[in-house]
Length: 372
Image 1 (cartoon, rainbow, N blue to C red):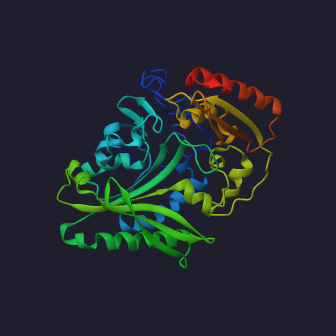
Image 2: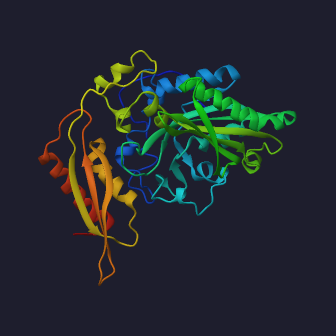
Image 3: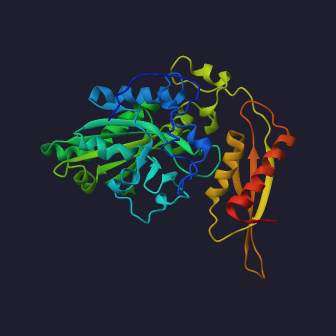
């Protein structure tokens, strides 16, 4: 069933994760509790949150053109919808448990809002937007978070309009960029590749002296349409990362701030308009290192997941600072530096020492590595 847009807004997090149906200790499940409890938070539907404000601005552009918004679709989807219907190869790295959160062998937390493209096309939708939270196991720094938000659009054309697809796609998206960033921006198109569109493009704008990727788009691949029973038609699709754009438009320096409950953050956006974020504090970081000999199956995202699970949003960044190969044994050792920093208070060395000890124990027990 497709749920239509209804505002039910809260600043508090709540979880709608179906633990009974998808127990987190089940085989093939790699979803940690700290991720599951965020399901249902719906930051993009909160009208005084930067993501909700940005979603509304994008909707204001597309709604007059007849686009219907779906922003309450469940993030729990099948691998068929998330990968197969979008022509993502069976050996593609995005299918790996090191990159994707699996609930079981055939069910995932969606990695993109395109996971709903097939079902909406199959119901006969011709102009629609999908917005929602998406989930990926990723690195830890100020611009990456395991949960982020996307908004995408699809338009299907009548057979006699098919020669207009590329030109209308680019013209419309250039106008969207001007709607968000101003009419006098400098823009450029980059040819790229996506499995589900052909040809594919990225739109970049020149912002404060640097090229910024705004969105990806393209002509929907014929196989995607054929699988949805729309094989005689053509259309375009595009997608935007809401956090990426909001961090620029609102000048928000750290992606973790989108999840804070601190009123000093939220009251700055009470107007529901795009305003520049004013930092209210900057607490010092606390650095800790961890070194270990690698096992053949090691993936850095497994380490990142442990650190996030233990420290939550107190971890700001994890990065490799040393890579050593033993001259006799040939074994490889990595040393990672972990930066802990709270958004709203000073951390003590003692509490971080306690967290770091838990991290060290988890790394040994969960990853089977040998600490140095």
